[in-house]
Length: 369
Image (cartoon, rainbow, N blue to C red):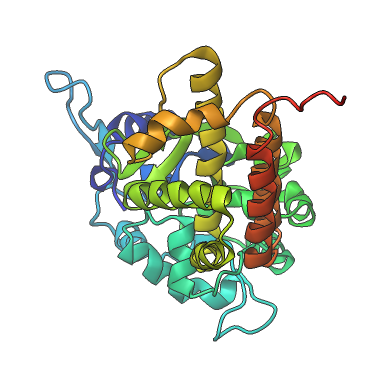
């Protein structure tokens, strides 16, 4: 991957090439940003540029201020291997889980070929949800495991096969447990010569502070015009936007009627999504509480368009100071349950009953006579 192949990140690419050209390469770096903004692609392009034998520098003095200042050559032996993701000093780590082909004790080593195919198919900008679908995980959540941590430690102890840098890229680093994170602290603190560890993550708040303190932060900005839309503070892929809004409106209306047959069918459909999509939908629903509460309490215009004019005008009044906190907590607890591999149908049905009761508490309780 060359920087020129990553759309919308020229400014970031220029910062990264300047770091390498100045000789200020930190041995551990955290590329923090959304997958669809090219955080992983930038990490790989950065490693390719670092190991390129004939780096290209361009005269941008008279050109556009956002013109690319430098890039890897794409022609040297190192670049050609990076382009095929087969460089012997490039080591990739990522969340895994059991599948039909790996039925127990999964680790990255068993999925290397699949992951490289995934990166090629998605041009190194696929999401975690895309990876789960590619693996056919049957709704199971992936993790970076102890065997992966052991592999990282062993890999760092080896000498490089070629003359450049040995690079470890850990994608979705927030999927490391505390045990795994603690196992790699030493290689983050005391790296061997000419090695680089790049952690690629979307959520730093889900990572241990001991990891964050040992990595240089590289914040990856969102790409203008990407295929995601914003609902309040929640980023939703464009292809999910209308579907989530439709399912949310249907759900809220069912909760007033509590028709069990219709509600059960709704739960079955949401439970049939991948766990990452279930979580994204629930985050969308959680954000709706915030937006509707602001609209109702402060008279602010509704920032979320649910695709139904009648619902847009009437539903915000259902979120008041008497139920907003309870609703927010209900969604947060269900998201946590889904993350911990709870049975989705039960979790969603329990959530539905809980929300139905909370919506009825939008007014203060009548005083007892």
